[in-house]
Length: 122
Image (cartoon, rainbow, N blue to C red):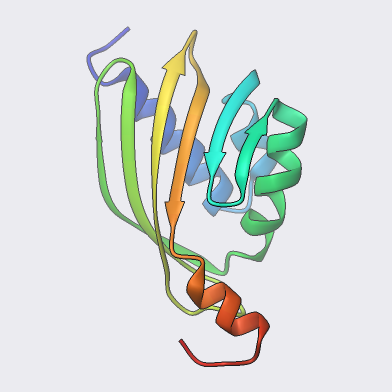
């Protein structure tokens, strides 16, 4: 493994889901992934697909703001535009094991999405 193996995998995952290729992104996810999300704990690839797939599907554009990592850990900071929220900044920490994302922590501000659901400006 290279010194940036985790970063390489995390970037490939990000580029796939943000580029409209969610199935390709899922190839980089471990079957027993543990995802810590603002909505709660998501365990297993199928549960993760059900959680992340709808968000990936509504993303209109993304921009990667920063990416850091080593052999095991990676951190990505990005912005996503959706039909409901024109600017949704987020961050993800990835732990890589056996060439796949074994653990993921997603951090984002839910308030703009809650306000959009209520028909209010952020």
